[in-house]
Each structure stands twice: as structure tokens, then as C-alpha cells.
Image (cartoon, rainbow, N blue to C red; front, side):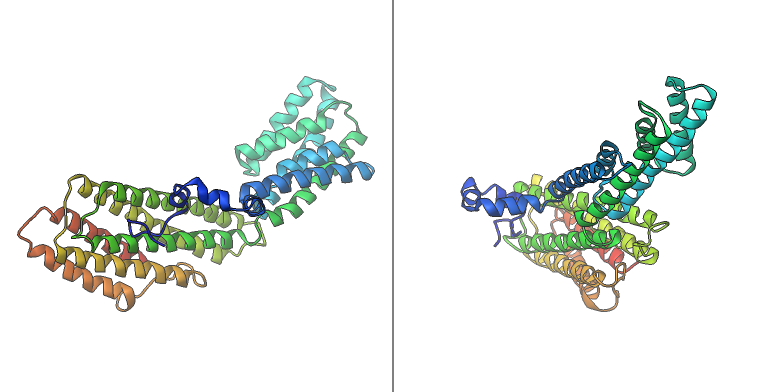
Length: 377
């Protein structure tokens, strides 16, 4: 299914086609769709973890149900290794809070000053352990829970066991928030964005070949919006990949070599997405000037972009099993794109009208940049 842009309707465009389509969707289908969203799934599982921790804390001796529920709620994260980090912070908070509180009680007695000293020390220890500002705050919050009212050895034990119970339940829950390894999820996300990049570029190529290479401003604007969304999601995948690389230092779930390969694949896809955004901006500028490409040049440029889209698709397909593997620039779609660029450059050199030179030359340079990224040059 395509629209007048030549681009298969995106989720946003399909949503604009009217409320009638939405009405026909059954309520169970909508509920299933809603619960499959990462945010909804995280919210439901976080609530379940907190409730289970409270119930378990109530049933077990020497376990604070309130601390267990709070710990479970704040420890559940979208990924297992992120939840492991938060669980470490919570347990550290209890240990540091207990140790500093006991020391403070010996020196100054139970008072606001003891709490002040405990929090200052927890920030210092969190900085030494490189837990970051968020980690230091998380440890500090747990310290307050530990030092809280009715400070005693028994209170420390119940809060410590509560934090442990809550952390364990949070770890179990976090495994189901988004199954798979962190770098595996980042790879799946970025391969999907590479495929969308190839599809959008192919749609642009198809539209350039008709009618007479003229692109309207609304159509070019839709392309730009789609390209910017692809780039934004690719940046999110880069953050996830960088997080996976950092997690490889301590998490047994993350293979360091694979994590680095996924990060490199994200950079490849991000480079192509940035270039695609630049292409779309060039097309908007040409549309605003109401420029049309000669038929021969439009056909040549269309061939260049189609071959470039094919190269992106081939590289992303290969990345499913071999991330960051580059394409040969001597064979395959990269070679085809090079030959097509030569034909298009010949059309540009023989043009009598110099107005299409700006757009044609810009698209050729950007297509060449994409193939260089894909071939590792």
C-alpha cells in the first residue's frame, strides 16, 4: 500500500486517515496492543513486583514489607543489567547507612547530624564506586530509610532483608520487561531503523523518476519528518548500545566483543540516517524553489538512490548475524551505485540548464557518502 509520495504509509500517516479505521478495531485487540508497549509493560511489572515484595515481606520474619516494596518499585528497570545496577545501589545504601549510622550514634548520638553524616559519606562512597549522581541519590534515599525512626539493630536487619527481598524480586521482574541481552536488543532496534532508511530512500528514488523529477514541498516535508524520526530512534539505539558496552565491564550477560560490534553497527546506521536527513532537506529546498529535474537526470539519480537503498538493505540484513560487517565496494549494490553515479554525473556535465546542478550534485555527494560508510571507507 502506497500513498501519493510513493512511500508506504507510516504509522503516523495511517493514523491520519480517519477515525473510522480505529473504530473497527476490536477492544481486545486494542488492549493487547496497549499492553505490548514497553512503557505499559514496565508499569504493570513494576506494580506487580512492589505488590509481591510487600506480600512476601509481610509473610517473612525480619523483613520490612515497606522497604521491600519501595526497593522493588525503584529497582525494576527496562533491562536486567540496569536493574542489577539499581539493586546494587539499594543494598549499598543499606550497608552504608547502617555502618555510618552506627558510627554516628557512637560519636554524636541519634540526631539530624547523624543523618547528615550518613548521607555525606554515602555520596562519597558512591562517587568512589562511580555510581554517578543518580546512584548517589539512590543510595542516599536508602540511607534515610535505614536510619529512619526507631533506629536499632533489629530495625537495620529488617530493612536490610527488605532491600534484599525487593531487589531479588525486581531482578526477576526486570528479566521479563524486555527479554534478551542489552546489545541484542540494540542490534534489533538499529537493524529495523536501517531497513526503514532503505525503504524511505527507495521511495524517494521512485518519486524522483516521476513526473519529470518534480517533488512538491508537502511530500518532501513528509520525507524529512520520517527521516528525522529514524535518526532520533537510531540515537536512542546508540545510547542503548553504549550502555551495553559499559555493562560489559561487570555483567556476565553481555559479551564485550559483541557489544562493541553492535555499537559500531549503530554508528554505521546513524551515519546513513544523518545523510538521509540532509538529502531530504536538499529536496525541500529544491521544492521551495520549484525546481524540476530533466527526465534523463531524474532517471539517473533515481537509479543511484535505488542502488544506495539496496546497499543499505544488504548491509543491515548482514548485520543481523554479523554486526558492523561492511560491504565490498567492488561488487554488489555499492558497485552498482558507483556506476550509476558516473552516469548521473555525465548527465549533469552535459546539462545546458545549470539550475538542477545544485540538487543533482548534492544528492550524488550524499549517496556517495552513504556507500563509503557502508563499505567502511
